[in-house]
Amino acid sequence: MTTYDQLFENNKTWIASMKAKDADFFEKLAKDQTPEYLYIGCSDSRVPANEIMGLDPGEVFVHRNVANVVANIDLNVMSVINYAVANLHVKHIIICGHYNCGGVKAAMTPRDMGILNPWLRNIRDVYRLHQTELDSIANEGERYDRLVELNVQEQAINVIKTAVVQKSYLANKYPVVHGWVFDLKTGVLKDLNMNFTEILVDIQKIYDLTGEFS
Ligand code: CO
Image 1 (cartoon, rainbow, N blue to C red):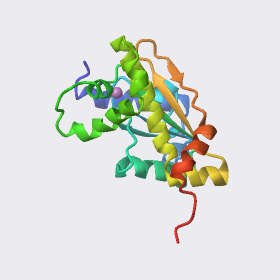
Image 2: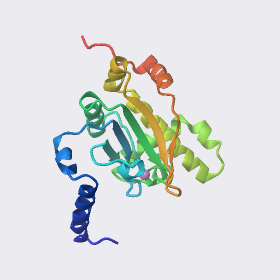
Image 3: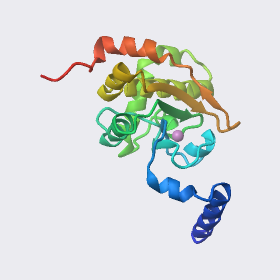
């Protein structure tokens, strides 16, 4: 266990290691950010965004919350998506869930979780959308794993439902939205290989927001 005071010692060690790799590292870092990626993942301490992708500071714009939810009326995640697409011009948006996600587990549990109820409702809604498939999985562990994957898929679709993503893709052919799951037991990042263009066309039958307001 790292003590609180140790954190500042760690910081000094980290500065030295970054400077050892590149003497001008912090001068460059202070100038601007031009990340290619927006990563939306779970707050879980075991899933550190930069580390699992091997990316340095400046290379990925990150948003994390309980169970990597992209809720339509969450001003926080919507601001992150809008800024990342319209201002940073990210080329890829990654929704990354993980197996053994406590938030997903809680959404499968018949319990009052207080203020977490409306948040976890987003995941219960994913279950309801895919109830036939999920209820057909007899093994509870496998059902839990599958809900983790389906939650990633549905949250990625929620990203595709936004006007900023649809309009940017129409104009620039980016960003492309991806769904991933991180496996804590192996460290492996699994790409769910979502077909972005196919989903976009399908989603726009109902959620097309590319027209101008008049
Ligand atoms: Co989690």
